[in-house]
Length: 277
Image (cartoon, one colour):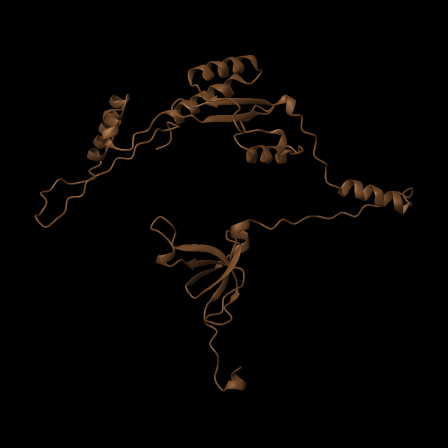
């Protein structure tokens, strides 16, 4: 290039292919909770403009950008996908009795053919309809012999694929066959539960989750004051305020005349796990 053009070209932009690359994400394309960069692998240089070509494995696409930070000390493939597995190959001596090519071909086809799914016996499954207290909706669940709870046809499809079973959506009906009369239907459902051989712990968990889901969560402070659980919401709010006071989250000051005082908004929810903050 120097002989052809008369000047020595710069190679300062050259980087090692396969290095770990960080592509900057502009502010307009992200919010304050998202990262400022995307991690990828350097695969080349931009064709029609200045910049680099980076493969983003999570998005499965190649992007071109000049705002790229490249770490040539790290291999992108090993960093993102781990060490490359190396397999040792062994050569086996075939038995002299296996001279028939057709027998060998039939054996290879048998070993390479995928395992056919097992037939699905729906008679061993249990179907339950659980009405909600404060809604007309009725939830339908299927329980296979493994005691898993399947809430939709998609859950059934995933279960059959994981356990190598034939999937026939026509065998399942997730539409309720009864109307929700609250306490009457609840009694029938409890009787059905006790008569079926399903794991008791699974039903206890279902009832617990159902009670939490059906509990009405207030959306505003006024709704907490007319809620049956008013004392519990008041205790939770007092505890939250004391926690922020102990951590000195704010300083109390006199507002100026030209300043607008902003209010606060409570967000209420019920924890499903005491360890979740």
